[in-house]
Amino acid sequence: MEITETWLRKHRPIYLRATQHPFILSIRDASLPLSSFKRWLGQDYIFVRAFVPFIASLLVKAWKEGDDEANVDIILSGIATLNDEVSWFKREASKWGVSLDGIVPQPANLVYCSFLECLMSAQVDYTQAVTAFWAIEAVYQESFAHCLEDGCKTRDELKETCERWGNDSFGQYCRALQGIANRQLEKASDQVVAKAEALFVRVLELEVEFWNMSVLGS
Ligand SMILES: Cc1ncc(CNC=O)c(N)n1
Image (cartoon, rainbow, N blue to C red):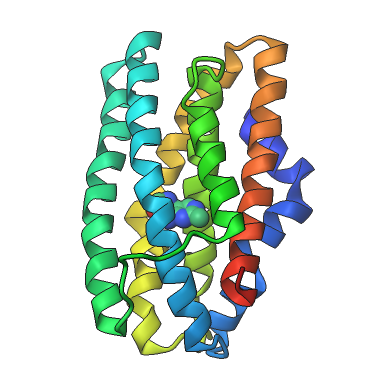
């Protein structure tokens, strides 16, 4: 079995806390207060801005590793997606009357953004960084896809947000990232795999804290 698949089973409880968080469940049943959605929108914009240099550093690691062109192209497509995403946040924020200037990053956001910064350091190798990247993308894909399933009462005004990450092509992209991570993990040392697993769990914890912040504030 693929290494990431064994982790998804081994860490299923925290994985479910990250991908079926009350923030997500309340989008599904149309009970999420608009104030929570607007808080999430502003905070996630800050996160996405911090995500840009992380993906750039991943591209450099892929190049140094000599990973084949197909994998570099997948990461490159992630940068293109992020470029569209930044514009989407600006449009969505103005639609909701949320100013993106002067938003104060909440503690959970600061912790997550400094985690991204740690992933950029030379101490974190390509295998570990691409594994964390897959986990970060996969949590959003699964979370928002959950809000698009039949029987959901997701409000029309929030459907575009859910489609952004919950759509099938983003799902394909996440599976491609998972493939890169598995191929890298297969040929990695036990130490590298162990640290990659710790980073995988840490991403899930940070995602849970990010959703908690969005629901509860600070
Ligand atoms: C907190 C968080 N985690 C993952 C994502 C998804 N990646 C890029 O958009 C995100 N936007 N925000």
